[in-house]
Image 1: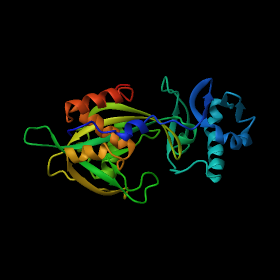
Image 2 (image 1 turned 30 degrees about the vertical axis):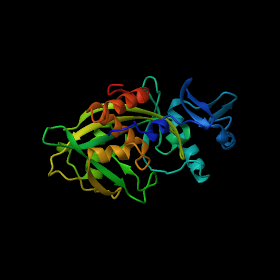
Image 3 (image 1 turned 90 degrees about the vertical axis):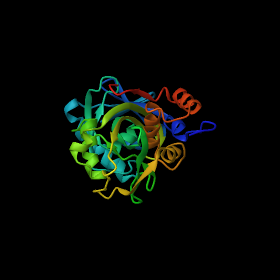
Image 4 (image 1 turned 180 degrees about the horizontal axis):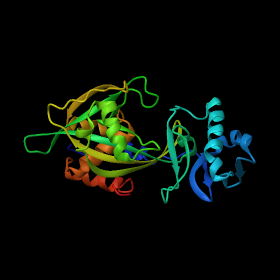
Length: 288
């Protein structure tokens, strides 16, 4: 990629915050936040299980009752259209500082509350004659996906449910999305962690995406198994990076692709320096 560094809209989107929100608190710990515009709807659950206070919203039930109380709240908010893209998947609700799980909730509700979630994405790359990345496998999301239909994506990617680690999620998604066996996916190496905190139509995405790189042989071709991918394309690096620098790739996937480009030194010096400076707050070591 030559010439002036691109704008990389995904970088701005990763931290775009415009919606006023109040902290959501459990056990005195700020675990997320709720949009001020939704406080009226939450009054139906006050004074218990929720306490609506001037500077925060607090879950006020014993630890053993949290999951059930939240499940009831979420079903009622779903009926009002305030929790969107329901998945029937259980996510942990952690303390963002310690990682201690304080409750378990429906995946879609994590966006309503802005609670911390985790994801796992893999860059699938093919080497050139010099052994360096020459091509990247890019997926196009199915057009009936609940989020980002038809947008371009990484080889595989998905959210981490309550009973899996990021790497276990990668193994599962590798088969479901790309038809790649666990033995292939285990070759993946860890990159960094992408930190996102941004307004999205479903609420607030507060997420840490674990990035992996998977080198594939020319004969290893991904084949979708679960209907969530419309098509795969193996693109020259320049074309894949152009997608990541534009607006037709999901924000998550664009950031994961740009992380790959930085770590493998695939950008011109001026573009690499600009990207590294602008993204320094987003990327952390894989152990974070």
